[in-house]
Image 1 (cartoon, rainbow, N blue to C red):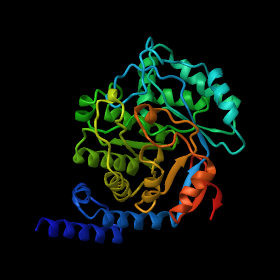
Image 2: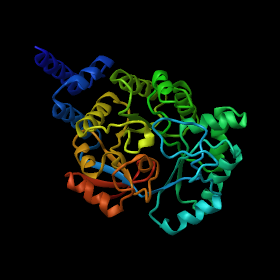
Image 3: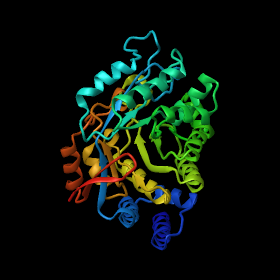
Length: 365
């Protein structure tokens, strides 16, 4: 009887998907409960194909980290350091420019910048970091700072979130990263010691950015102590904000990386859980253009499978990712353009090189 019931639920959801009816919270819970993971993935693939055909997107980008000093002590983070701790650093803009310069070329489209909430430097430090990067590399889009960092800057400077964003945008900021959302649940944030923005503050930072005409990104860090209900509420909150602003470009489900003993989390997500998360994200976030399969967290081979489960983006070249790898990610810390093209073609898809805002640059059929 339970198996018949879950199959009936999946059939009813499929009818909604094929007729374009929005899925409910209860539908999302039923998708999680369904033992037919491949069936869920097929539904997501149908939605993705309607949106993007056979196209899968990637970008030539580079990760940059100005500081790993952070006042927060989130239980899942192995990247952060106290200011006087071994391995702590706070680089000057000139230092970061010197690090980036050997890797920048004509096709580099984006700097992806995140870091710690460093209380030992003023807001002007973060503004100057953006300004100097933009002056040095005016052709490169600056995707910098999470919604949580924006809230931190507002508290640190005494400015409003809106004025923080205006100041950063005038310095050269083009878009916000999707990080800092973790799980949009205050129970989760308290249990995981997420000592930064609340759920409401994170959402408001992106709402404000959207009101200023900025397009941004959104994430979820899943696989630790959150409940399935909390994952679903996270998706519903993002979908509701997207209904209001239409400002998100992509959703990135991030599998937690628990290999370091200091992380306090002992298990790793399964391949089935990762694929189900990609697929359900595509089905529930009907107003998001793209769902990203992040090879850093799930590996390249599972990323290929995710392209048959609703994902339409595989992120970018990165050069050297540090945050997930500090926590124990077992994937490559970056890929070349040729490797990304090979990954996408290997899944039977057409690789589309894009810019930050998903404008196509070159097609590799």
